[in-house]
Structures are given as structure tokens and as C-alpha cells.
Image (cartoon, rainbow, N blue to C red; front, side):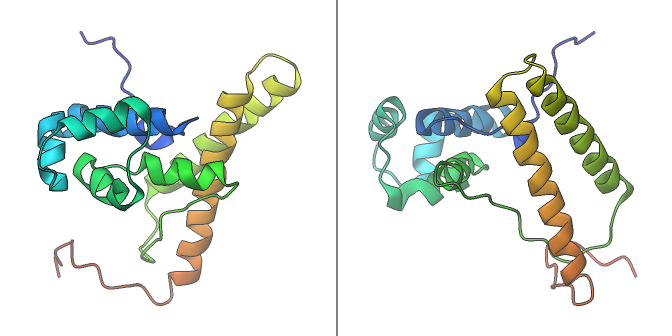
Length: 164
């Protein structure tokens, strides 16, 4: 029986640029079985040694951030850049119908954030975990807010097949 807890990749919020770069790499390895060499190839780099250097010192050229995140399949660097500037990002919703899992996720995110907030003010939770939970909850609420506004005029979703 596998007792190892699965990492919730979407709930993570990096605390620095190097961590964001590293988590992107770990996600690519874990979810897509991509090595540094494969990530560099997908980015169009001539060799992977430059990528190793940028991951080590946290100084990736800004023009390569999007291709790095695309090759890894997740956008921790973009999220960190926004958060470090005091901004919050939300995924732009397409105005799709609400699923039961959406409400359950929103509720559990709120419960988790509220529990950590209560523990924080009692001196029993740390700043990083509490801040991460609150940020995740605010992003979920903002997503649903935008989804409600777009619900009347949903966008075309070319990625899903119609089963009519």
C-alpha cells in the first residue's frame, strides 16, 4: 500500500525565485517524466548546461521564462513574480458550468484557510503556510467570481469534444 502523500502541485506558492524554478523542474519530472535535457530541448536551447546554471543561481533570462514553464507544464515562476510584487493571479475561466468538485474544492479551501488563520492568531501556525492557504482561497474565489461573470457568454472551448 502506498502511504506517501501526493503533492498538491496547484496549491504550492514558492517563496523565492530559485524555489519556483526548482518546483517547475520537479513537476516536469514527476508529472511528465521530463529530464533537464528534455526541458532544454523543448525550450529550444542549444545545450542543457545553461539551464543547469540558471536553476543553480536563479538568474534565468526573462525572455525564456514562458518557454521554461511551457516545457515543464506549470507556471511557478510567473506566480512567484506576481506574488513578489504584491499581485495575485487567477486562471482566466471560460464560463463553464459549475461541477460538484468545484464547490467542494472551494469549501475545503476555505475551511483549510480558516483553520490555519485561527491557528495563526493563536500562535500555532506559521506565516508561510497561513499565507499560502489564504492566497489559494482568494484565487479560488476570484476564479468563481470571473466564471459567474462570464457564464452568460462562455468562450469557445476547442479542447473538448462535443457529445451532443
